Image (cartoon, rainbow, N blue to C red; front, top):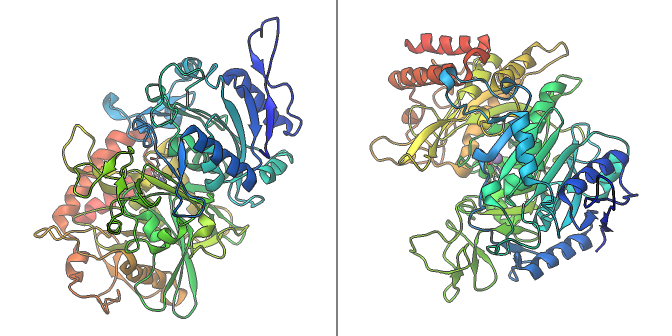
Length: 632
Ligand code: O2Y
Ligand code: MN
């Protein structure tokens, strides 16, 4: 194995008798060595392996996982792997995700009447210390602690930030190697003394095991706790090996901790895809777009436009870090290096470029498997005759079964550079220039296909007012329209009221500032009688991107849209519908007053109960102005 494998020595005598500590790690920069030493002292692994990120090392880690039975090779493809998790460890666990700050109000607005905040979960420092003591001491006994130096963003970019994750999960090492730039080049950067976020992760199953593992997937579901200490720029995650709980560069660092760093430093860390769109004349613009889950974010990020001559290129599908440059242009990078996408529903029809991206060097988790050593999930064509399927539990599975073949949150983890339409500028040092910000949601009624905000302040209000249809929690039935401001509800690293104030402050910067235009889209409006979607979506969404593109073009700036109570709508005929049949544009752009009266009442209740005194006056004023326009 190419990485440094360091034996951990046992200290004898004195107060530290029985403790394990790192003898010496000569290759680590002092601040990194201090962090690793602290983690070793607490978690007491038997070995420490500093990850170099070489292909040989990754291959050895995957071979070890295969020997353990945690992953299996998928012989149908080149260097692809399948992991099946413990069925109790299949998704981000929001209820066990906390932010630890001195004051509750640093983390969340304090809801009226003692209600529980829906905008984050705060933990008191002393409760957190107790929780830490109950979990981490000795948690890596018998296991190797991997030290992963990683970069969010291209190494050396002025917009990038660095992290070091210690983990006892080789699956996490393999996945972080795809999702981030990890290994020796980052360690060299850290040797320059740059700051880094301290990320400590354990699956929470020291050896010898106290009970059997399920699917050779170590985890400790009863003890899961994903904690963030934004003041210390530290993340401590325990008990889960899955996705957003364990790949700490992603939601924990790039959104929760980074949103707080961004507030302190004057930039934006957002739950947004970034794409470049080029018109038939060769003019290119970039947009960033925030959507709650289940709105097809990865599909939009890799869209194959149905409009002839138009081209979309992908910079990122999940997270955008954006900062104004010295000319006042908002520049964005995708801090990630891979896609951790939902597999079910991904197909040649919905996202052909994702299908091409995941054909090699990909780790699949909890998808179905074919008898040919391939993958399968709901939404793909049935496999060829004679090919049989195994479900995500490892059991034989047949079409028509009452349970799904792939877990609904099953994932592919693939290198972004493999996307056939990855943007040529996706790793550019300065980031790509953003002309438009798009908010969106799954709104079956009342919300038009697209509208543009009247101003930056109004756009911030539109982001704050985002809602989307979601499958309700177990205790409810059916679908509900959930509030998900800026698609950041689970990911705010600090008080949402302060977050809104930070967005508003972009307009008052002393330096030159060209604010992007702000839009809202809804691909999911339904015909109230038939329940059918009114808009075909997918590649046809290019027609909406075209309108947004034109609205951003300087020569069109004075050209009026159609003013409505909620924002600028396209004038009749401004959206190209050539080649589309049976699409009722009237129904798609209807803005029903009773719907918006109810919407404003619900928004007022939400802002009052959840944000209260922390709601900036400007956002309150935008709500009041909307109420006046719809005559509440
Ligand atoms: O369930 C998980 O652990 C993954 S969550 C996730 C993964 C990729 C992109 N976005 C998300 C999300 O929850 O927004
Ligand atoms: Mn996401």
